[in-house]
Image (cartoon, rainbow, N blue to C red; front, top):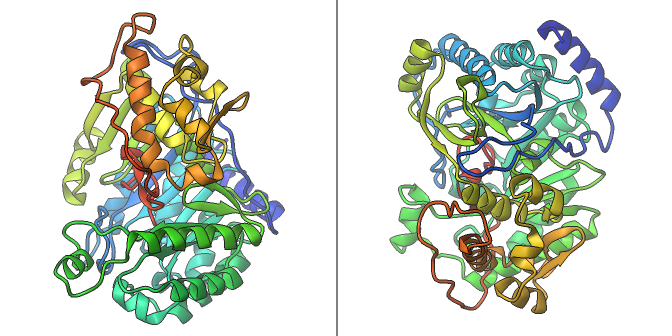
Length: 484
């Protein structure tokens, strides 16, 4: 479909989808298997696309994402580079259809609607972008006035992720956020009018000094405000951030682990009672409003990362590649732009993933979801070594099933409700079992990189619900962020 034709069709599709429940999950074909580096059979012709806008007006006290605060942004130059890199990488990947687009950051709501439209036009010109494709923009309440949000909708955005983080002004000041609780409420209300059924909010818990009661009150307030999607993140203290320095220096109290676990379980119970499905460790949806784009990561589908620091996972068939690569774009925006202007893209690092490494990602990401790792998806990556052959034999997985934390049945391998909260503790043992089974003579001869670690036991601990599990596929530019 021609680029301009896509915008007109997308607007029609958005009108047709308006109302509660717009924006259900999409199921693209799973990425192909591999002996590495051998070709992937039945090459995926589809991919999700992530676009990173790296600029912010200020750096929040807890944030260590790839973002930059600069006096002025040459938006025309950044826009031209985003457009060129999107075209280049789509050509290199030979992707025929883009299943979803996600503009993250940074603060992508600081970009103009013109920039968003230009990128989407380029994508639609380089590959098929269905009119019904999910197109998400992360928005900061302080840069999301009504005319601006309307402009984004006209540019082709049909889903908004609002970085509310808290509805308490004292907590927002602690986090270094620009907006107030009132501004957050106003932004969500406007967004729900413009993107009905497709407005998500992000919330943080586990703040220094936050009590269980304060979290419970904030959660109830959020339930009265939200649409049909909520992303819930446990605050992680990151080295180099102002908030971490305050806590580690003793100026602020760190929340006890038991309190964090109680906060998470309380949120799960409250959201479930309100009709939400916990479809991933950190994500809750009702009326079918699951995030198509984020599901593509957790289902280990192909995705292309555009912009400074963006990550990608795809087969570069346009360069003669035959195996999936992990790609990272140059972090610093000015250096990234020079590279794009010079050679069409700013890919700084690319690594061919071994078959074992691909299976490790399938396992670590898939178990974050309520559907888990299906037999079909596992088979795409491992046609000769089934889930049953790896995890249906005596070992760690059997023990976890007996303890009620894991299920292996006709649907595949997945965590129970109780096990999902302990995923960080379950994964090391499961990865060890996979690595040991892979190294057996009956398994494919390519063992992947590194030695098989010793699978030590230990008491389970609660899973981090924020960005963290799953290696590069969570918590980096280009994948799942806690939003602006």
